[in-house]
Image (cartoon, rainbow, N blue to C red):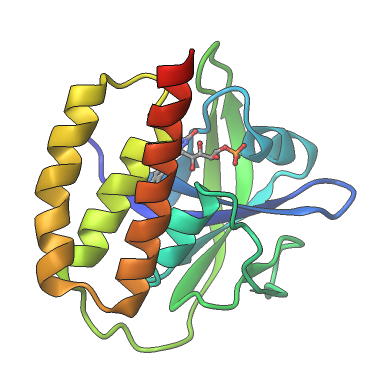
Length: 190
Ligand SMILES: Cc1cc2nc3c(=O)[nH]c(=O)nc-3n(C[C@H](O)[C@H](O)[C@H](O)COP(=O)(O)O)c2cc1C
């Protein structure tokens, strides 16, 4: 299996609308592959404007926020690509698409790194950060996962949150739990 790095990817429409989404980017030699599922705004943006930024952040509220309708995170102009980076990025890589492999479910955009920069020290992680990212992935798959699997995984991940979370991880966790509860009450009504 290749290395996959969980990042916040910024893209932009040709009209200039910035889009922020968590994506696992796949290592490809010196570059990265972005593989968005259809349909998605990230996919449409990469077709319209073939640049992206991979933002590395330890603020897991951005992962949880993007999946719960909170996408309005501050951005800053990038050095070499038209797509901006996250202001909160500890480091980022500016990417240019060099090849597209079409796929019915998940086209792959091979990207070259045109610039990278570090902005702030990485202070280490706690278990709650990893738990929030795992829970965010579960939330992105609510429509396809059985309810008992979600409940079992959340019960396990919740231990790390209870033991190690700072206020930021607790806030991110609460957003995700609210989304899971809303999804379960909506599915009870149908
Ligand atoms: C950590 C993490 C990694 C993800 N990786 C991917 C990915 O590689 N491809 C994808 O299509 N969605 C991925 N998702 C789900 C997307 O973030 C989510 O579906 C998003 O809304 C993409 O659609 P959009 O571009 O329309 O916003 C991931 C979610 C999380 C939390």
